[in-house]
Length: 130
Image 1 (cartoon, rainbow, N blue to C red):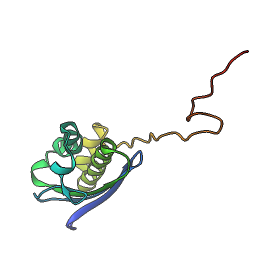
Image 2 (cartoon, rainbow, N blue to C red):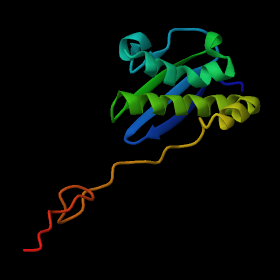
Image 3 (cartoon, one colour):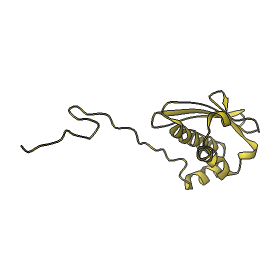
Image 4 (cartoon, helix red, strand yellow):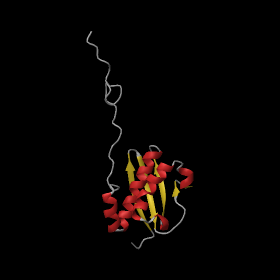
């Protein structure tokens, strides 16, 4: 690709991530903060950087992310999926690697809406025979 970055958007549950993926080394930024300030848990670092480690491009790339909605774990998965899509756009070779690892498959689960005459989505009122 001749452009200076690859742009992708992805969602998980209600979290959405807009990613600009660059092919040179710099400080990774999430919501205009350094990644070390935004993400404090080590397991979330592993989730976010797993596609870059799998394709062996972690040392010579960086990305800027605007993420919103849901909570930090769903945001991390949305970032991972957006990075996977950016890498798949970058190279066909990366696409096959990420497809085998199931990083390009969207997780479509969402919270089910509350139904009328129910306490929650599926929980009903207690039934009594007498």
